[in-house]
Each structure stands twice: as C-alpha cells, then as structure tokens.
Length: 483
Picture: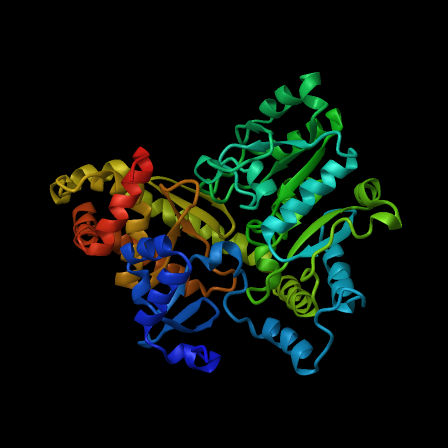
C-alpha cells in the first residue's frame, strides 16, 4: 500500500519534513529563497484576522495579505459561515448542467457596486484566468481581426500565456512563446495615443489593458487624470479599455474599485484575489451588456468561454459574504482613512532615517516603501567579497533583508515586489487593528535605527549557510547567464 499522510495529521508533523517534501516535489528554488529569509523556520498552525500563530505559539502580523487576497484577513467568520452553509447542508457545489443560484445572486450583488452598467459576469478561479477571459472577450468583439493589445511597462496581469503576453515584466516573459503587443510607459497617456494614431497599428489592436495602480511594479500611482485621459483616447480610436483590479479591487485603495477615484468606467473590469474573502479561489471578468452582446451575442456561443470550477457554489457563497462584509463595514472608507495616516507616518520615518528610503507611495492600504540600495555602502566592511556575486545579491534584496529582519525581530510578515525588488510591500488586511499599524511603524523605526551595518551583518551571517551559498550561486548565475 502507498504511504499516505492523513489530513488530520498535517499540523502535528515535523516542520523539517514538510519543508523537505516541498523541496523534493514542488519548487526547490523557492525553498532556497525562503530559507535565505528564514521563513522556512516558521510552521503556521492557526490564522485569524491579521495574525498567524506558529507551532511554537508565536504570533506574526501579516502585512502581505497574500498579495492582496486577504483584505478581510485570515478565516473571516462570516466568509467561513457562508461556505459552511453550502457544505454542511450538502448543497450542489459543482454541476455545470444545473444553474447555480449562488452564482446568480453573486452576480446580482456585484452588479450593485460595479461601475455604471458593468453587469455581465464570467466567474473563474483566479486573476490570470479572469485576464485571459477579458482578452478573449475583447478580441471577440472585433471578430478576431484585432488580436493585439497595448499594455504598460512593469505591469503584471498573470502568468498564463495570454496574460503574460501583455505583462511588462522581462524576467517573467523570457523564453516563452508570447503573443505580439505594444508596450508603453505607465502613466503617460500620450504614449498610448501615439501607438493608436498609427493606422497600421490600430487595425491590429483590440484594446488597452492597465492596472489603475501598478502593484508589482512597486505601487506606482499614475498622475491625476491619467485614467480619464486613457478612457477618452480609447473612445476616440474605438478600442476597448480593460482595467485589471485584481489587486486594487474590493476596497484596497480606499474605494470599492480604484477606477472609482477618477469616475472612470472601463469596458471590461477584471477582479480576483480578495473577491473570495481569503477563503475561496474565485475570479471575475465583468463587462457591459453591449460588450457581452457584441462578443457572445447568440446562444450558439454560450459555451465558447466556460470554466469547469468557475462559479461553483462554495466559491460564490464566500464571495457573497466577502462583498457583504466589505460594504457593511465600509472597508473602503477605513482603508482610505488608515492608509492616509500610515502614509504620513512612513514619510516621517523616511525623514528621520535619511539615506534608507527613496520614496513612500500608494493609496489606501496599498503602500510601497522604496529603499535606496546605496545605504549598503555604509556596511561594505561586512561584505565578504571573496564570495562571487554576494554584493549584487544583497543589493537586489535590500527590501528582502528588511522584511526578514522585521519577521525575525518583530514578528511582522513582509515581502518585496515581484517586478521591483527595491520596494517593500505594505499590504495589511483592511480589518487590521490600528494599534497593529502603529506597531509596524514603531518596528520599522527601530529596525532602521539599528543601522545598515547591523542589518547586513545579520543577513550575511545567515547567507554563509549552505542554503544561502546555494541561493547566491544560482542567483548570480541567472544574472550573468551562467550556471
């Protein structure tokens, strides 16, 4: 008989065992990366709200929110209760031949808060799948004659092939057979117009896909009026505007959707992450009746875009509960108020510790701290230059070192951005207590007060472990094109 581990035994198994199984069967490189920050030394056994409890009964404050998927924190009781209502009463969770009333009512509820006439929904399992559906929808509106899109540099819309084709992240794109498109700088509407004003280009382009605020680029907030200008340009040239609200949606930026800040109505809106309330995996592609009818306007096309697990009852019930909590507790107003205070507090720290921080930016509780790697010059005596590439690796991971120190010294979970490694992500759950936000500020203040020498010394000592040296070797090899 094959050896099977029981679900009820997982939480009591040795931490080292699960780490090694992850290394063996899933992603050994990720294990090495997390070992560098000492994240693998933690075994989470419980999570509630903004707090993760470890096997050693230590409490960790989550300031990552799984990249924005945990706006309601971990295991919100109303979301769990909604899922439990479906499972305990043995409702039909998955059947594609029988219409799900939960999907129907989720669509109704979402239509009450989406911009203007965006009232047609396709439910799927993730953000990248929702993006794929949006791209297909837009191309279908032009009967496939315009298969290309304009997208922004340093954007991230997903890692499946279509979404990745219009993602401006060179490290993610190389080696894959991507679709052609037009990359433009983010925040410069004139760059979009320049592409569209070329008749030859226009004949190929179905739409423009943008994040209202670029998340993985380092929380890049565009100039005021940018989205309005892009909306006008799309109208002028007859192309569709797709707004990716996967990270910014569900109140994260201080409004239900980030496009609400400029009263911009896209043709297609993409939503995921926090839609499932941190419990279910669900994404949504949302459009107007006009766009839907143009693309899928007759019964013969009703099966062109489907998803086996999309719109299942448990996921839709979780999303219904998450939306209800977000509206009833006015989390948009809370994110706006707390985010404004936190932004001001972080800028005080920036002034208090000159040389550490280039910029603090964001909106609501979607914030980024951009560090200045030149601060490491003050710690050069702790750089063992006999290890090839160590200096480069440390410069690439300054926010990662800060995050690792925050975790080890203060019990705060943080991480850097995927497309901009100079930025520390500050994405606390929107339900987080104000005292916990203050604790983060005090902890960061205390950490920077220790100076760069202390930070680098501790990180280098850990890097000299075998796993650290393995990571450094592989990282510098990737940077130089060698192994």
